[in-house]
Image 1: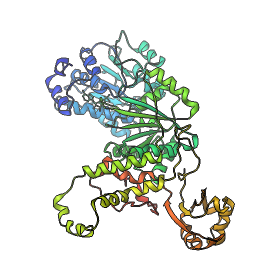
Image 2 (image 1 turned 180 degrees about the vertical axis):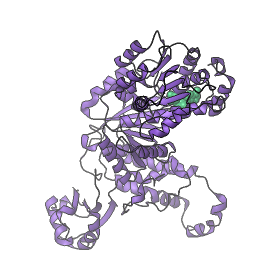
Image 3 (image 1 turned 90 degrees about the vertical axis):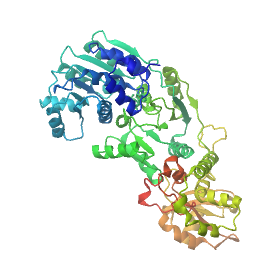
Image 4 (image 1 turned 135 degrees about the vertical axis):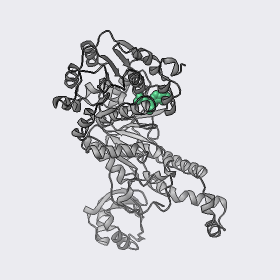
Length: 577
Ligand code: AMP
C-alpha cells in the first residue's frame, strides 16, 4: 500500500491530510492522484460513493490551483447542496495548513446576493450546484473564462436529477482548454454522452467493478404484506437498538408520514425531503450528523450524496424502481471502509426486482426474517444488560446517595434485584410484544392475524376477562361497552377476541369511563374485570433509551417505566437519546 507522500503531493498537504486522520490513500486516491497532478488530462473515475473521491480530486486540485491569483480557476459541480457544502468544507480542511484559498460554495435555498458578494471577492475555487450556478451566470455575477479545471462529481446523479441542460450551458461558458474530471458511480448512456461531447481522450479509471456494490454492504430483504410495512419497520428498528439509520421512502408525503408516525411512537426520528425549507433541512442534517437524531427518513433526492459517518443501516421502505437509486441509497452506509447493512422491504411480487439488482451488483441478497416479538424482547433485554455492564459509574457523585439506596434494597437478593431492575425498562416491550403476530409472509413460524400489534393505532388498550368462550363477538362487545360505560362504537378501536379474554382499544379520553363502567359488572354469571394494558404507541421504541448513543449524559429513568398509560407528550422527540 502506498503512502500519500509517494503520490507526489506537497509535504504541507500531506501533513494536513494526516492530521485529519487519513493515514493511507484509498484505492481511488492511490490511482487518481498521480494522474490528476499532471493537470492537463481529462479524467473519468468510475467509483462507488464513499470511496474517497473527494480527496482523490480535491488534493490534486489544491496542488494545481494558484492561491496567489484571485482568478476563479476551478469549478466543482455537485448534484445537491448537501454534497456541495461537504466538498467545500473538505477542501477547506485539506488546505487549511497548506495554502490560503478562497473557496466559495454556491447553492440554492440560500441568499444569492451573499454568494455573489463572496464570488466577487475572488474565489479561486467554486463548488456549485448546477441550478444556482446558472442563476449566477445569467446575472453575469461570475466569470468562468479563467477556469482551468472542472470537476463533475456524481455526474450520474446530476443527470438523473435533470441537470443535463444546465451542465451543457455551464460547460459552454468554460474555456476549451480546461481539464474536465468526471466522477460517477454508474456509467449510463447520458454520462457517456457527456464524455463524448465534452472530453477528449480521458484517462479512464474504474475502482472496483463497474456497478458492483460496495463489498462492505450486506444486502438483505424482508418480505412484507403491504399493510404490515410500518409494524415490520418498527420491528426492525426495535431489533437494532443501536441503529443509526437512514430510511428511504419513495415520496415526500410518505417520508413525512413515516417520520411523524415514528416520532409519535417515541422513536428519535425526523424527515428530510424537498418540502422542507432549506433552514429546516440544514437543521435536520445537523442533528443527524451530530447523532442527536437516530433515524432519518428521507426521499432519494434529498438524501443524495450525503456523507454521514457510521450510518449502520439503510432501510428501503419500498424497493426503488431504478437500479441507480438502490446503489445510491445503500451507498450511504459502509463508507470509508466500514461495514453497513441495507434492508429492502419488498412484497412477494417484488422478488424479481431483488434478483435483478442482485445480478447487476453481483452481490447476493439474503432474505432476512422480520424479527418476532420474542426476538425483539431478547435483543432489547441483552442490549439493556450490556448497557448496565458498560455504564460509566460516577463514583464521587453517586456516593452520597448510596447509603439510602442500599437501605431501600437491603432485603432484595441479587437475583431478585437483577430481575426487577431489568423489568423497569423491559416491561413495555413485553407488554407490547406479548401477543405480537409473526409478520413474515410465509414465515417459518407461520403468520397470524391475531395478536396485539396494531398499525396506526392511537387509543388506549384494554384487557377484558371475557372472550369467545363467553359467547362474545364484536357486536356484543360493543353493546356491552356502550351499555355499561356509555362509550359508543365511534370511540372504540380494534377488538381482538381471544378464548377466555379479549383486548379492545378506546379513544384515550374515554379510558376512565371504561374502567369505572365495566369493572365489577356481571356478564353471564362472571364478574367482569378490565385493565388498561398500554397506551397503544408501539411497544417498540420506548426502550430506545437503551441505544448506544443514549448514554451521553441523559438519564433514562422515569421516562417510560412499565407499559401502561404513558401519556403521549409532545416532547417525545429526541427522548430516546
Ligand atoms: P468520499 O467518497 O470522498 O465522500 O469519502 C467517503 C468517506 O471516506 C469520507 O467520510 C472521508 O472522510 C473518508 N476518507 C476519504 N479518504 C480517506 C482516507 N484516505 N482514509 C480514511 N478515510 C478517508
